[in-house]
Length: 110
Figure: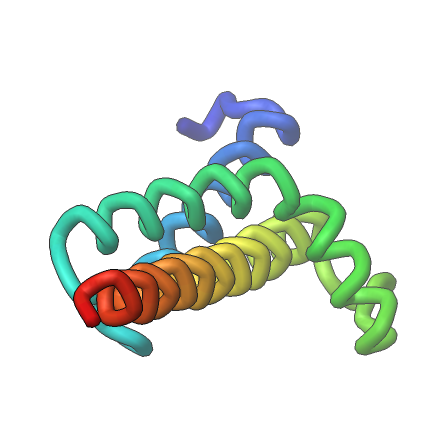
């Protein structure tokens, strides 16, 4: 672990931030079932890894912290934020589709 390169540390920070963001999201707003939890967790982790660097840079710039944080901290922060946002967005979309399906079933059942 000591001989890990800076790129390796940044990837580890991305993964840890993405997992932490998804885990916080699970505790913050419970999913309706295991399938929804698994999908939302996976989407959160993937989005956290993919968008973590860009989100971290944007957050650091907006909060004027860019020069005060180490690159690993910026990536960790961005990954957690991207994961949290993705998890919330997929939860909102899934509930919106479920609501539309219930309305459609109610109309067809009349």
